[in-house]
Length: 258
Image (cartoon, rainbow, N blue to C red; front, side, top):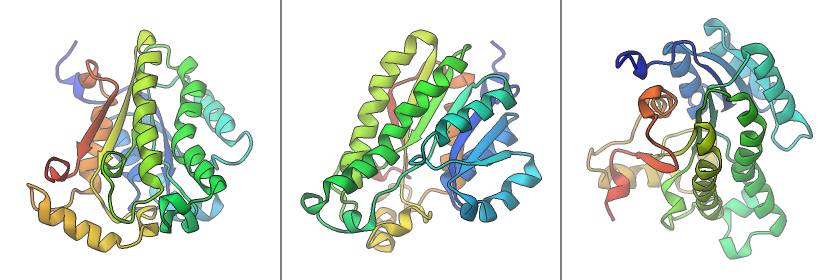
């Protein structure tokens, strides 16, 4: 293996889900993957999101499509298009999370079964469905990456319903790593520190959460979108070939401090 080429994505083909705007983690990952030499197909939720995302992707030649995880056949159509466009898949980045605000803002014990189930479907089970659809097209192995948060491991104020959902997602990563390992597919959860994304805007007290993380992080700051994208795309390179089944933090070290 050429040591230098192990750290790029030249010749790699990938699918990135969850672009929302210039601040979204998925956009940072798609942009970085393309900059590292990958050919990328990306998705946003709907036509409303497309008006914010297409001005970002179009100049870079990133193929953009809409995909609503809750719409019948949308995910299947997206994967089919990506495979037809790219020929195969070497990496998949899943950056999708959602919960009904009424359930997210209340106590976990007050959450509705319907709201809990929808949050779990969109934010967690969709990664398993995506893996089932993509794995047959990852004939040379590759990487699958999803996004978690410290609230999966600790009870973070105001994170509420999403804590148990992200805990399930991190467990899913471990089981998927075992199931897909024999075909050379690695699976990871990236756990970023809080940054101001559209998804984060739904969390009550988010500004206070960011300030709290700055205060306790050993690096004394928040991480950047670029730093999250750097880690996520590294995991898609051959340089990460000996790793799988892990949750990897990129949060300026705040997870290490009580």
